[in-house]
Length: 163
Image (cartoon, rainbow, N blue to C red; front, side, top):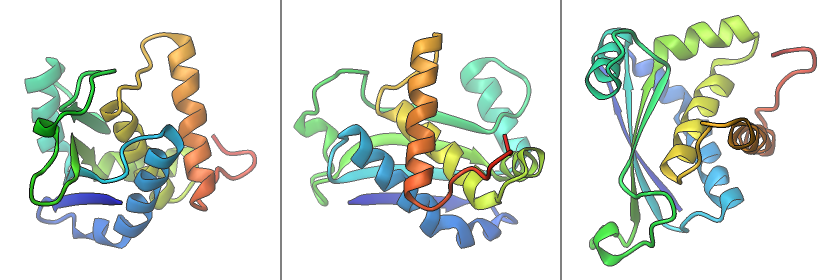
């Protein structure tokens, strides 16, 4: 079970129409990776200005980006009672920040739906919360295969001939 705690910046409420598909994709990502069964993830949906501030503060890059992840667990770290919300029994993995305007632009650029792009970005962030990375080619290829497998499984497959 995934408890996606969504907070949407004012003016971006259109994300609500995508929430069910994004949540399903995150749940499938957890299933495909053998992640914890009961999980809590914070998802903040923001515009470019807020994303630029996050990117500057946390990565030192003075520009917006599409998605950022803030894991609470170190890769390979064992889950302890301190990682579990005592009221819900959910493992608190961390937070993801999604730029909805970036997702919209990229959906147009790649020629697919906004639902697919938003789900892709949040799954990408979820994989980072689970300790996956793309620092080297092998890790990046594994992440890409997982992302595509998850999106295929929830009905958001890439259209033939599209990026």
